[in-house]
Amino acid sequence: MSTEKHHISTYTSHGVVLTALLSLTALSVAIAELHLGALSVAVALLVASIKGTTVLTYFMHLKYESLFFKIMVSGVFVMYILVIIFLFFDYLFR
Image (cartoon, rainbow, N blue to C red):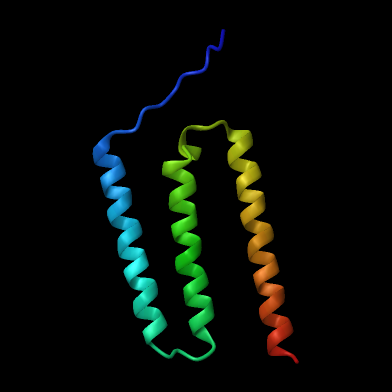
């Protein structure tokens, strides 16, 4: 038998997360309408990263997982950020 504790989220917390994700989606659409030049992609990626982190934390219950899983997911995000930084440097110095 498993001795792990299961976490059950409340409808209120799901509603708050849903509202936050819908607000971030509206922000993404608003940013797409603005023409920020080279910053458009960076800001869009930042908003998408915040949305992804929110989904991972609450809907995939990473908030309640062990430290090992949190470190592994953080490592993936660090690799993602490094790839994006290298991509921007490659684009900038061409």
